[in-house]
Image (cartoon, rainbow, N blue to C red; front, top):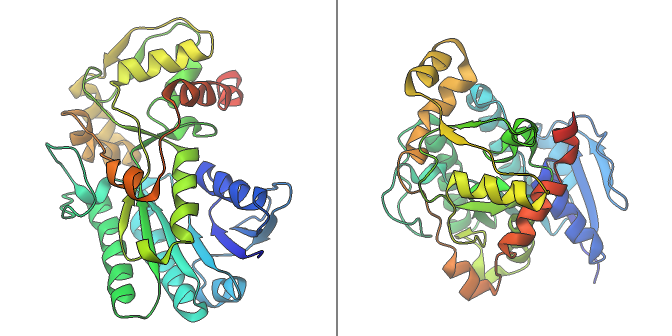
Length: 312
């Protein structure tokens, strides 16, 4: 039976989710401010998703409402997220559509052990506390029977279309020219990388399974790679030689944070790069039967799916 799904946000995860649903024969409505994102077989709608009445109208009759929004400018999160989060909750509650949220690891905060579902959200920065609060409110309304909600969390993204927002892909334009990659934190520590397609596959899987609603799930993610290993392997997948991968000096990062708001927000998350930062997705793999894509395939998708950025 054909179902209708609404997706807010047309970044790589929103696009992959739309394509997966379309390819299995469902009707997909992709909501962005401009409405200019065009995918074959997907309805593109221009709307302000923080307008609860408008989003509710667009969600009427939908089986699920996917929150794939991802404001890339950290400095506006406190302005953008609260009304958008409330609008998504209102639309889900008013229509019966399951709210399926693509989220990150920020809510967990600093940790010394691999991150697992069910561990407390203990963020110390405002971005992590904001995202933790969004899930806590959705979970509260789910438990009260007001709506259905489920959240999927992924590590730092790799894959097609990630572009300048990815910690690996942002280095490709210069690294493919043989120039040194200056990374945040230590380049030799284990770090988890989630493919955006695997993230989308998980969102689609949990949307249709009432047994898993009301919980946080981790997107299937491969064994960790250091920043140096990940960048080197993506470069190799694109036919490029390795480059030197060095840590951005702390005084430089501190100086940038003083004059640039976005860098100040990034510096607040530097704990992610000072210790191993590992996502454990074994529960998702065991319960949902999802496995991460082979790492060499992800590296190939990352290299090929960001060529436009590299050549720009």
